[in-house]
Image 1 (cartoon, rainbow over the protein chains, first blue to last red):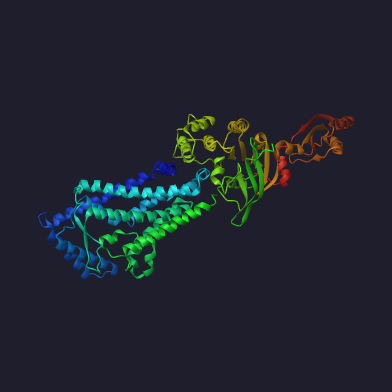
Image 2: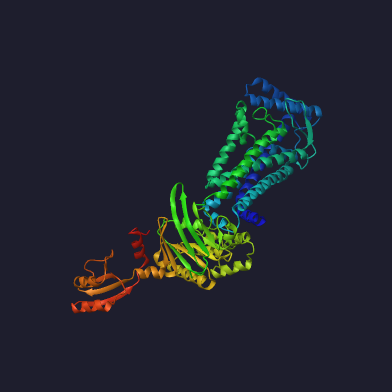
Length: 322
Length: 310
């Protein structure tokens, strides 16, 4: 099995798809980091560097509140605002500056915001052609006429997908730390952060950043493997890599759009794409549909991923390679 | 030869794809050390049959055994004894020839790098094996394809249209190479082709396939002998024709002109001297009498009732 995975790995690396993904990651993280830098400078100009963070935070809460009162906004947006205001208040009470900058904060923010689209997109790019390209190029004939059972070959490809997902999450973390670290300093790992915040119960937990980041990375990885499994199934079913990618991209993007508008459509919560943003539950954003919890979303993703994997293996085992 | 156990046995295999029957009840055997031709026009079911032999598609009915192992039930053991190129030798063109072989070497237990060097030398690829496959000519891909098929020291080698894309020199080399493998290494080789001349030149036995059915399986010589021909050249032809027709059955061939001096008859092994004597006595000048084996082309047209090849 190690040999089979090594084979897949060589193909993946030599196709240079990985370099493209690496480049995208560096480019995007660089952009985000720069945006963060500009924002920080603006804040400094606005308040002056000698103004205490407590005052800044109070002003921010004030502006959020007035926006919430003055403007008509959809239910989901309003809830979101309310949650933010509530969190800022808690920070103020606890004497913790939520806007402190550092590599840890940047990484946390990046993970919070990339789990539902950015990382899944990269996973799709790497995974889409794992099986389909062998079929469209005809190399599948060489691969499947060896004295190795089909399911072993497919398993080696599946494990390669899981390995790639892990590497993508790891690489994003490393690049974030390096880029953000050199701009804002490498600290902030022990700075506390509010997590598991919900409007219904006044309960809140403060955990250090490093713990939050590990949890967020784990959840992001899990969602990405689920997306990878679905892509994998399509890669088995469809011969064209472009079709696989198109299908998955459409699903992912529709997911992010749905998440905003879906609050009244109860059954939409069973769609995998509105469940991808697992870090939302950590940061305390309200879920797309009321009543969704972290465990529910993990469960939905698990069922989708497991079914897709099962189906992919069953189909591949008996498929006619024409 | 028939007393030996076949290394490859195709037994009553049928295949239906999306309700369309493609292959109808196909059976044939391959014995050690023979080159077996699989002859038929494009679309006759050659490649589909080959895909069933190597387990890429599953027969709707019937079974294929390789060295006694059922391809469907004992896939791994069956595949240990077979090497194949199905249709074109498709490789990972972003890898070098060596890296391609290395991929397959890693998949088969017990294959050493020494064996890799052996097969590379055997197909004459030593100089270019570290170049990217992208830069190879079709002939070189064909050779690399044979190298990967021979990697696991198979008992049966399957080559689907090996002459495709080769120049005449390459075709001759390929033919000699296949004969050497069969005669010196005792390999059984199944060669599919739509080129009749190819099959005729290198195969011991041949199966003729058309529209998913086998029309005939026999030794090439036996098939040909059945349809032996005699070529006559005599002038004046119009005088010679009735005299010859009295003794032998005249065959009208497509390219024959009415005024041509050439007359073709079946060879029923009768004494041609008697016919010659009759011709000479009638004052016909006989320029040539030639016993000739028919081409497989004639044979094929005969068997299929005129279905064109290609």
